[in-house]
Image (cartoon, rainbow, N blue to C red; front, side, top):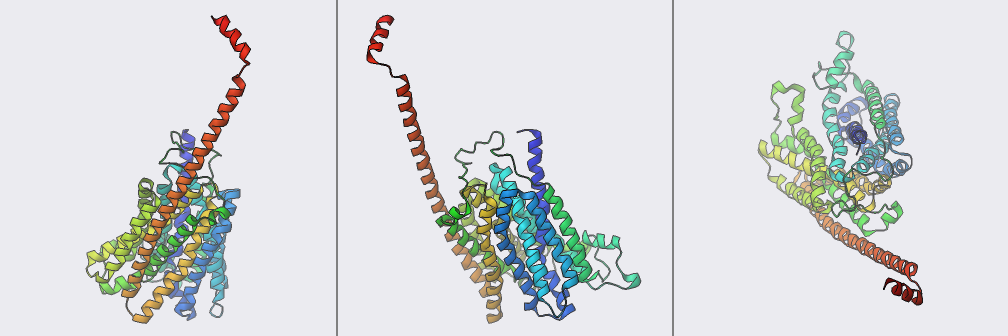
Length: 483
């Protein structure tokens, strides 16, 4: 492998992480809730629909975006995503008003969700093609930024979204920059939601497009030097189109496993902040001297950090023990964590619970794209994973809604977290089925390969025999001459 090629694939990974950090800010939607409710006197249900539309559109657009990415490459498609994401906030700043909440659903929900869908699939597909020898680890690194994006975004955004000051109290450009970098707490005022939408729209478009410029696919037939794609550990699946993929039981079980795993996570995460606040009774982990950086060691911050780290950790683990085994262990561990949450009381227990839940939830988004590449090839990974990822759209509705219904019915968090644990155990059982189906499919492929090799050998032997056979009399003459 040349130095230029080595540098190229790490450059692609850098572009992937830049894009994902920006896209991951979608998880910090809650910072918009109170400013918009205060501005327009909307109900909580009204604002939450915008987030639901964003998740649904995100998942739905992954399919056409993945198909387009497989045809024209990741750079152009990710650029489209960056433009759409930027435009969604710019339009929202001018169109959203009190009497028309549907404008928020259209701008942030549908246009913004489409932008995320277009851009999200490109870094994953491109990076996996450059690193067939490290699919799990590289997928984890590619999507780690998505898990960490909300962590870096939420704190500064909550300050800048405050009402702007007047005259000498207004924030200058340098103050905005210091707050955006997390260095300053501000002075009790911000720039308002409209100016923030404009600022975030421009920033999102610029950085996603810059990251997209670093993306590209490797040359056809390229593989890392010294890597044997036919070795047992690194065996590559044949490239399968999405129609054929959807007809396999293996794809169906992957989809169902994704639904159960993601639904349980979203059900719990949607209520994590109020649950931890009730346990801590308003106290904080962070000492005063940490200032704005204290958010990194609060329960939500800890969960976000380990959410990002879990994508890398489980991706790497799955490279060693394979994807279904990693899924099974991860979901079992997560299920037990949810069951034990009902007895969490101490600060240390809150810290460990936040870290453990974040670690396992993050792993979902590393294991499923890697498994899709393992079983159905990398050539059509964009559209193939787009179809598998529709499970997240289903989970995006079921998780928060069911969790909210259970809490409203009992006014306690116990039932929601117990139900989340049960879903995790079901997901672990589904992973066992995926493991069995994958091994059966692998045996069939090996059997077909062996049959093909045997037939080819027989044909070669027959051809060689026909070529070398000579008439019997000639053989006698030759033998006499030899004597």
